[in-house]
Image (cartoon, rainbow, N blue to C red; front, side, top):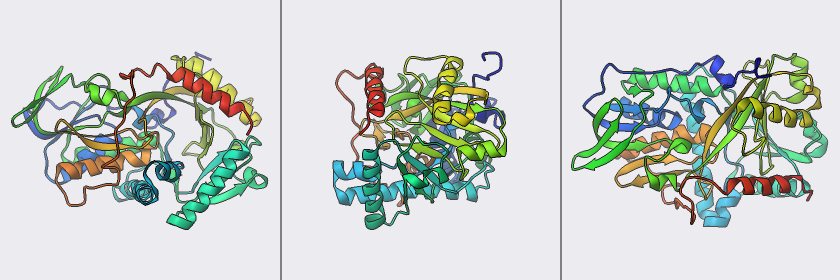
Length: 426
């Protein structure tokens, strides 16, 4: 297998990673953005369109993190309303869910308005319920969303599951017709192009080593020199590293895994995803499946193991899980296997805020395809002191835990527990 499988995202075949390098770093800019993913580029586009001088730093080839590795699902957080109601009360939960909806609509509109060619589809998303108790909870939450917010969601009984996904693994589910998907790396490249066209500068393979506050703003130090900036936006999410220990203590970096099959017949593709739409499930250690944007392959995501660091080995294990759910894929080879970083907050809500004068937007947990461009835009509006900069996320806590300093040492035990719970019927 190691000789035939690419240990990199399937998405990079159509959208290779790019290295942007201005001839020299500017001595001074209005805004320095740390992180060249969806968040940073969306912010840079908004700022550059309003005549601000913007420099985006990326530690690797631009967008090599989650923005070009994710499965491209565009949706709202299916737990958002129930979780927010329990934590903050119904009125705040209503506003938070509306904000999550606004993020989804913003990203759909952004792609259309900017004419980004990234296989945008708004054909819905299916959520499979792995257990009867989860299906019952799903039905209650769906009713609450319809009644209290007016969000369109349809409960799918077990007898109708195979109209949406070709397995008997689920006891029911729900269809969210307003959601959809994109080609994640083409979306990223399109955002990069628009930001550059608007006048933003991007410097790749240039990690920010230190940020020092000065009387006029900030000094950003990198291997290619120092830059003075009036404002700074931290948009590093799961790849925040040691740059700002405060953020490191509040973001849990997780590595999801993905695989793509070889080209398959249309009949076999539709036997897996009859509706040709993305699907996720309710497992604690969740799984995703979707057709490739061109409809020729199956792209599958999940977590085979916490300890594995080799995508070629992980791909074998993830393929075995895929085939256990979809036996019709037993003869399908995989051609790509990769990992993708996800940044999660302890409260499972995105964070937008200010720390020691620096703006930050991160922690999408893991709904960043919709939330990251939106909160990047909103962070830019905060920098611009615009009247429409406020969000319902602004006053949420940004929590940490005792003994957590950025290394999620406890996750193997947590994932093992959740995996056990996933296999226990209820």
